[in-house]
Length: 149
Image (tube, rainbow, N blue to C red; front, side, top):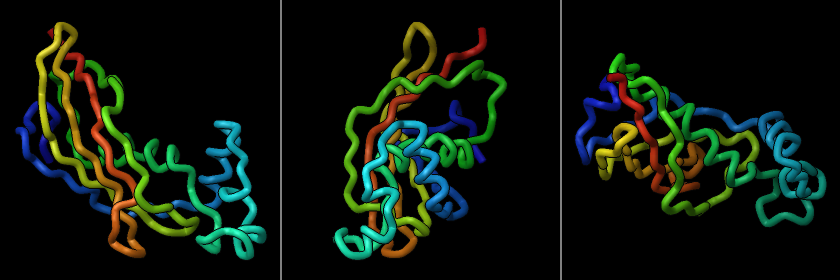
């Protein structure tokens, strides 16, 4: 497993294991964000009124699982003092993540930029659904590696 510093533009990293998105995770995310829309929480109503037939994860829950996945594909580096979320250039939710489905993330390093504070990494991420093999989310994420002197 490579460290972030050892990656080259074009390197592709794939999360090794599927992660099940449970209703409990969805409920906790709803409580943390205050987004209690019925499509995420009310399974009975979803059976009759939702086009998906079941509850679905919040799009931003799917996006927020990205750091965990990235941590599973990158080895720690003594050269990096801290990793800072620097932003998202583009984010699209292409398919819903249904409660009980599993996801896996793939990352491609698309750009690096030297900054005064460290090195900025632009990573194109994709969240794949186990049930269909389709992308649920795609986006370009920015991470700043604050380097040790």
